[in-house]
Length: 122
Image (spheres, rainbow, N blue to C red):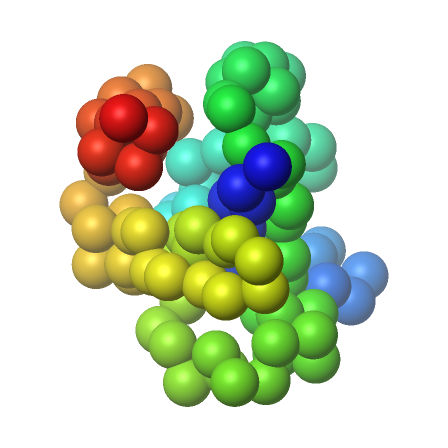
C-alpha cells in the first residue's frame, strides 16, 4: 500500500509543542506550521481530522520536523509543512508548504487533499 506522510514544521519536544499550542491559541498569525493550525483542536488533533485521515486509502504517518530530518535526511531541505507520497522507499512531494498555507480551514484542506490525491488513486 502507498504511504502518505504529513510533515509538520514544528519540533516534537514537549517544550516545542507547548509553545506551538500557545501560539495557535493566542497568536495564530505567528504559527509557522499551517498544517498544525488547521488540524489541531486545543492540545489534540481534531477528531474530524482523525476520521478523515482514517478513511484515506493510504498508510498515513505524521512527522514533526526533527523526526522527519532524523528519519529521512535526504529530504531535510524541503520547505515544511509538506505532504509526501511514498511507495517502495521513494517519496514524491504531493502538497508543498505554499499550497498548505493557502488553505483557510480544515474542510478546505480536506477538499484540497482529496482533489490532489485523485490523480494518484486513479
